[in-house]
Amino acid sequence: MAAKDELLARHAREATFKQALIDKLTHEVANLRRLKYAVTSEKFCAGMSAEQKSLIEETLDSDIAQLTAELEQADEEAQGAKDKKAKQRPRREPLPAHLPRRDVHHEPQNTACACGCAMKRIGQDVAERLDYEPGVFTVERHVRGKWACAHCQKLVQAPVPAHVIDKGIPTAALLAQVLVAKFLDHLPLYRQERVFERAGMLIARSTLAQWVGECGARLQPLVDALTHELLRHDVLHADETPVGMLKPGNKKTHKAYIWTYCTTSFNATRAVVFNFAQTRGGENVRGFLRQDGNGEQAWRGTLVTDGFSGYKASFERGVTEAGCVAHARRKFHELWVNHASKVGHQALRYFQVLFRIEEDLAAATVQERRRVRQRKSRRVAAALNKWLLAQRQLVPDGSASAKAIDYSLKRWKALTRYIDDGDVPISNNWVENQIRPIALGRSNWLFAGSLRAGQRAAAVMSLAHSAKINGHDPYVYLKDVLERLPTLPASRIGELLPHRWKHAAAVR
Image (cartoon, helix red, strand yellow):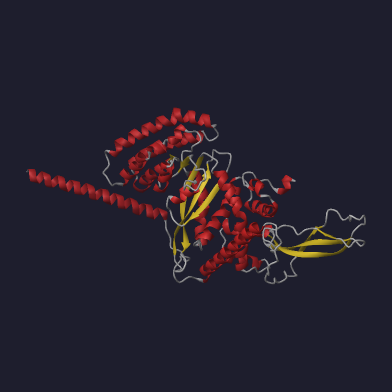
């Protein structure tokens, strides 16, 4: 009888274990079905289509142009104000005669000669730049009159206006259109080439790629200033999302990541910075937060994240961890949606109360938010914790319910950090909203053609998305920045940051 009882007990344990395994696998299958992964015709493979090859070509052209611009800039800084011989540039075909033209006149402020005579206009120089309004190309003719003194032969002429691409034909408006279409509307350059051709002007994608690369180099100091501004704040969000990146040499892709850092929705400064990296390692976070020991002041604020282990090393170096309650809630939501779990349903009721308290505090001050959280949220969180501990004793190890409960219990201190700090949000949803456009873009980019291409995309998207969340039109913002950047001193670059930017017309 004892042997029989032992056999029955063993069979019961095996049945419990197998049932837990079945529940776990059923839960995973249900999640995969809900994600609705679909195979697309644009999936990257060894036999690339012509459109996929064009993405690689435009990436290489942009990288070369950006490297050339950076080398020229470094060379200019090294030589200082010394005169340099004009470099040989390829001969450019004249712009089509059928395009409408608009003259922009540049005349000297003073046409009176020092000898007392009045100067006479003796000629002019004309430089043409290709301009663009959505669907319409025009030509902007920059006419620089030449004035000379008949008595002393002195010649006066207005200087050539500074341009973000030296001696280039595109106006800032056209460059802004290309950047916004590529990095905000997710239109690869080969598609933009077709759009421009329908508008009456064929611009080779290699030319567009060169413009993108040079703009990337010119805008990088502004992105660096935005990063420095972001790290001045004590509470930040962080999250990461995968993107494909082409491996050099074998024409295959591997998984790279775009890391996103931004201020909270409580902060008056709205800023987001994207950082492209080849891996998901925690060294990327430590590098961005200046914790790699390169002499810069390390950031030591509160970082709101999900439960990814890559942030752990930063928390060990003085950064305060704040967990995302929405991630904990999501585990129980999956239980309820997939299996109509009573555990999931009851947990969701607790989380619903916590989030309703936050909705009521959306417009509250920091002090009021902390006071109400201490009075209301703390009691609800304590009841939830007690209930989770009791339920954990009733569910088998390895089950989906056990995993959902363990996720919250193991991170409980970080999940309830927000209750003691009115500046800390309850969830990481704000930064996830900033990542959504990247997820949309993945289906259009297919992959990043190189590390430099990924970093350039992250830089331009940082400016465009920061402008967007500050209520600006990204096209208007980038157009104005590209017009003002060439003549703006480095000490005043902070004026062009999206949260401080004012249109040049408003400044005047």
